[in-house]
Length: 304
Image (cartoon, rainbow, N blue to C red):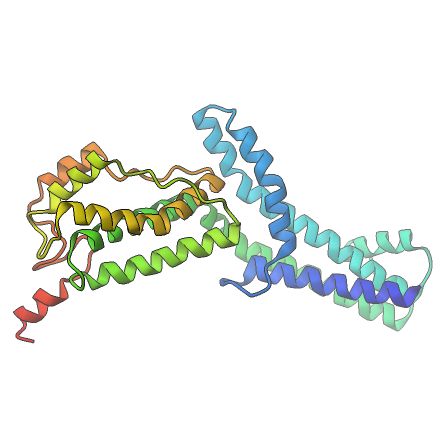
């Protein structure tokens, strides 16, 4: 029985440490998702979001903003309890005795509130537990400000990603093939990012109905006279519709899951400003709508 408890404790310790490392420290995706962290977030996010929708607009935004930091604290609590329980099982396997007393003893060691006594093996386990506890504490202190900063930038990042893909899709639709390489590449990257996020959060796709026909006509009229090689209005409308079908349902589903509003395609103040800037175009000398030099014109100017 003690051997089984020791093996179970060791597995639990490794599981908690791997979850902590992947979720809290690793800056990139891994093939094995942190299931405990994901399960906690999905368990609490739905009722949290449902309750927030019943509040006023300002209160809803504040309440939703609390979820990220609180969920992180909940994950830290689960990891701590898991490590304490795992070490209690290992210490029980090494020294025997009453498991309930061993659990209290492990809690004291992890919180540096109790000293180890007994066999050499128990001393080694106790030192290892205390070292892990200190390491977890230092890592949390060091990484928590950066993680909290990422929470505060989440809405801006999602809104910018949607906006950027919208711009690239529109530029690709109104210009002839091969004219806007930067927009095409950026669109492919943004589409892949939205697909990746949708897969990670397992969201349900939403309707792609953010751009009305009259809004498209206004956008087309604003850039038609400045693009280098435009396609016809209806051809551009068809191409843009096809491009929107690729990414917009994913963006809408992601926004619904995160309780965010996607930015609109057209705002009155933006259209008025755009119409006052005749130098803004999809290509030409200077920069295009995605902020990249127009390669074809630049090469001609430089004699290439």
